[in-house]
Image (cartoon, rainbow, N blue to C red):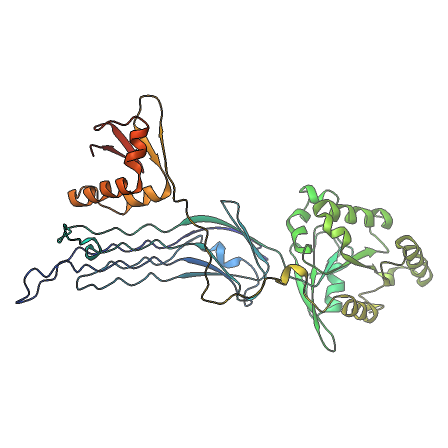
Amino acid sequence: MLYDKARIFVAAGAGGDGCLSFRREAHVPRGGPDGGDGGHGGGVVVECDPALRDLQSFRRRQHYRAGRGSHGAGSLRHGANGAELVVRVPPGTQVRTDHGDLHDLLRPGQRVVLARGGAGGRGNKHFATATRQTPRFGERGLPGEEVWLDLRLKLLADVGLIGLPNAGKSSLLARLTRATPKVANYPFTTLEPVLGTLDGAERQLIIADIPGLIEGASDGAGLGHEFLVHVERTQLLVHVLDLAPLDGSDPQASYATIERELERHDPRLAATARVLALSKADLVAAEEASTQAALWRARLGGEVPVFITSSATGQGIAELSAELLRAVPHEPPGELLSDEPELAEHLTFRPARGRGFRVVRDGDGPFRVLGDGIDQLIARHDLDNDEALAHVEARLRQIGVIRALEEQGFQPGDDVEIAGVLFDLDP
């Protein structure tokens, strides 16, 4: 069974804590602080792996967590960085985060960082000054980012076989390629997309049998809404039309039904190159098949090649194969190509965090200081440690928080809430 959807939770590793340590060595009085820094937490990377074919592995495991950074140690020994976690997905996977970001992983080896590891805390060596020569505090490591990811696989096939159920798509795929799909004389025999490889003299094509397309598929009817996404990236569509439908339906109406559902699903599919394969020619007279082919060529205006095929006898299979190998471009689709210039590997561009802050107050409640940088300052320090608390207050004054509070009417002793912590601030 093809698993083309998954939802997983990924969490980057937390940073290690900075060490509180003092150098103690024989005959070395007042050695001073020598606490090392904590290591950074490992990030979570999603990587395109051509060895994978679907998202089946995510059925057995839903939560993924990168390694956390080690704590610092004495003698200025820094903690090790946490191990990076690589989540591998097949080519053609779309990754959407809960924040609305969308990433297309199309090329083998393509990588995207979706959760960054937390920064490690600094050891007490960093806080030694001329007036504070024995700092008895260090920083805590920050937690890593966490995010839910929705994965959706869109097959990267060159050719898609479309048509109503029981139109002969599976039999045609078996004739064109070495694929062995289930073939039976009833609708909805195929319940998942099936891939096959068409071998030419100088190239190969991947052909996908897209099942379950019926009227209303674009609105969720039948199975088609699950599989319409797999035709979005095909470069050529082969519309398989039954010359002898079991239910006696009108082939022209059947053709219009499928084409309408494709256009409603994605208007771009209306412009995708087409080939019409009139299937099951062995079940009708040769004259009738030729007449139908001539009528379809007249209706389509010569823009769509029309072939009379029979999977049972092999009629028209060689001609159809040659047309597919000729019509499919040698270059991959535009979305698989990147026009961006290659950058030097050492350059890294990341969106800057919001560095500002603002002070708000609701009625007679406490003053609230909002800002990511301020929240991180609180998270990094042990507020039960008097020296750490004094350092935080000094940093708040340097940043301008105290001045902003005073401009809002703050008086010493008023309550101030920062990062969910309530302070009785008396600077």
